[in-house]
Amino acid sequence: MNYLTVLLAGSLVVLGQSAFSQWLDVSDVTINKILTEHNGPMLEISYELNAEDITDHHPAYVFIRYSRDGGTTWKLLDQLYLQGEGAGIVSSPGLKKVVVWGSEELGLNNPQIKVRGIHMARVPAGDFKMKSFPAGGKDSFRSERPSTIISEFYMAVNETTISMYTSYLNEMGNDGSGWHDRMADERRGGIIPTDTLNGFVYAVRSGREDHPITYVSWYDACSFLQWCGLVLPSEVMFEKAYVGGFYLDGDDAKEKKNPLPERQYPWGNELPSAKGIYRCNYDGDEDGYSNLAPVGTFGKFGSPYGINDLAGNVAEWTVDWYNTTYHIGLDGFRMVRGGSWLDMPLAVDAVSGATQFPIKESSIMGFRGVFCPD
Image 1 (cartoon, one colour):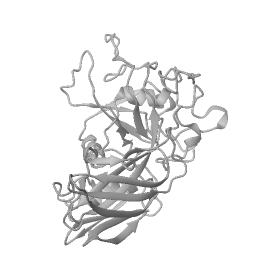
Image 2: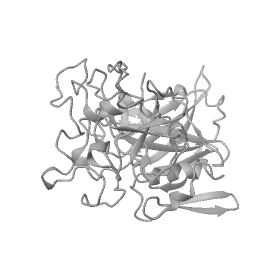
Image 3: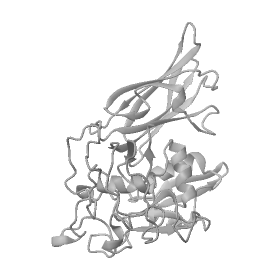
Image 4: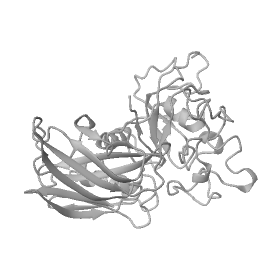
């Protein structure tokens, strides 16, 4: 559960609670105002993270948003102002606390608070075998790849869901921004808008909570992730998360060697339907889905880091421009990776990519976020 809280005259008032699919279970949010001798007042925010599967390898990313005007407008609480183990990457469940310094300077006298968490997977620093040419696909005239020795990052285990995006719309999109009419589609969307005197209010169509959000432009994806404090992955990040590094525990440890560093798919080299076993959501309905599947449906066949649906379901926006010998990015295309429910098996492999205008929204495109600690 996500509890909305406010501090009024030193006492805590719980305003309400909502369950959002794919948000981690956060409860018992409290705020205490503490006066310090030299540094002025500070706020201590505590909460319970009720997710027993949180570990160093699969931590939570926790972010806090606040309102100073009774819930009319909301802002992300920048981690620069926070101290403690309760925000950013959190590696264990249970009671968490975070301290907000300079609360008066931020105007946080009686704030309303929302705490949310996203399940992430750690991708350790180190080298990997990159077979595609980023930002251009298969260009025989392009001979240099970027460095494949990249720093540690954390990627969302699942694609962003309809319920998660609806949370964002209800905070930020009451003027209609971030919303596209096709998001209401019963089969490939699932958000129901209502125009009220105070702006738009959005609800999730029953049964669509865990499906990936679609009909989002590149700009929509970036706005949602900025709201969370995350970013889109680069193509290099996406492919490393897909195939794994030479050492799955990173180049510092080098104890867990990747058995298939040049794998064709996240699970290995078997075709998605080899031996009658369906490993991802791709073209056709033999896998049980004629279009979108709930995120994590094929979790048994995730990447070496336990990341779901990097192959199929929705093709995913990356931060990279389309840029080859013949196209230098001036046409405005962005790169999309992973393939979708509408693609054939060879188009959901580790090296295939596509290009799309960033203003385009489609039933085959979605996204997920990454957190970069450096």
